[in-house]
Amino acid sequence: MMCKESYEAIDEGSLSLGLIRLAIPIALSGMLQQLFNSVDVAVIGRFAGGLALAAVGANAANVSLFVMLLTGLSVGPNVLIARLIGAKEKEEISESVHTAILFSILFGLGIMVGGQLLSEALMDWMHTPGEIADGAILYFRIYLLGLPFIALYNFCASILRCIGDSKRPLYTLFASGILNVLLNLVFVVAFHMDVAGVATATVLSNVFSAFVLLGILMREQGAIRLDVTKLRLKMQYVGEIVKIGLPSGIQGMLFSLSNLFIQSTLNGYGASAIAGSSTALTFEYITYNIALAFSQACVTFLSRSYGAGDYRQCRRIYRRSLLYGFLFTSVVSLLFAWKASMFVGLFTADAGIIGYAVIRMRYVGLLEGLSAFHESGSAGMRAIGVSIPPAVLTVIGSVCFRILWVLYVLPLNPTYLMLMLVYPASWIVTGAVMQLACHRYMGKLGR
Image (cartoon, rainbow, N blue to C red; front, side):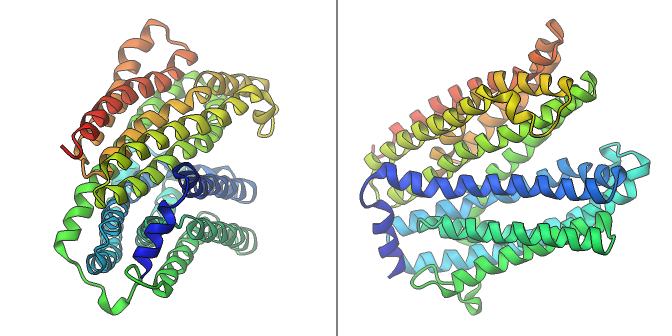
């Protein structure tokens, strides 16, 4: 059966090689998503003008809140199904897969409706300028139509990761991104649909990626095979998915809100600082995706060993994923920081913007590897069913700490560099408390 064969395949041989093989496609998926998002912005900016670009950009925070919620929630089925695979509970695996798929669709529909009802209020709360408000609302409402498919894709991808398959979600995302770019060009350049065109292209590409992964699951063999006639909500599994995944999703949403607070402060340093910071952030997203990928690989491996009752292996997996997340992220960060001017020069020739970007890349981006400590710590605890503490610690160590930094530390030396230092400082604080908590819970395994 698939669950048995996949379990043996993912755990045989070198643990290190297995973690790397699973993590690299996940990291590449995140990088590709960032790349395609950049292409979207380039198309709307080049062919539709500044107001259309601003209307799309005004939705970055709103979109991030919903995407972070769905991405975090998908940790739930990853942990649940991987744990059942480790325990070789074939019937329960099948029931949990069908529950997860149906739940993802229903939850996506629910927040889609909620977002539609709140769209105008959200734009007012964000103080969206009047000249772009209509375009921003139009983009957001069209984008919301794709939320059920974003939820479905994330849940399908999490199920495939449970059997060690992170490549097919990567290939699907790549094809979806290419489709998105082509549709952008058709809708914006050929049909002059502007904001509506970009949003429609995004929705259609999300529909494509969701149905491709759905089709893959329907063609699988064994316990994870999807049969649409068996879609049922088993409340026991819904409860587990929500218990594990919802705190992660809410954590991501609150994390985005703290970044909005910092962004509002950054706006006071002028256009060059804003542009320089956002340019450097592009490279930080790339390196952060590496740390995040190893934490997601940690969830899959550790959950399976936990389900199998191999607690010694759980600790080995955790230590190894933390080590590789830190090392791989730090190496790529070092490369970006070392050649910061060259990389920023790919985006702009403005000396002022380059100066601000280089500062961020050398004082923030260089230390991105520190994020592995709180990401892996959070992943390790969720894999063994501890979901609330990592969410609370992240909110305290990142969200609250960053707000306090801006309010009380920044005024002591109100420079751009001091504002940027809030990021590595919060990584150190959050990483330290997360490691202490994870060490405590890991130490209890098997006792």
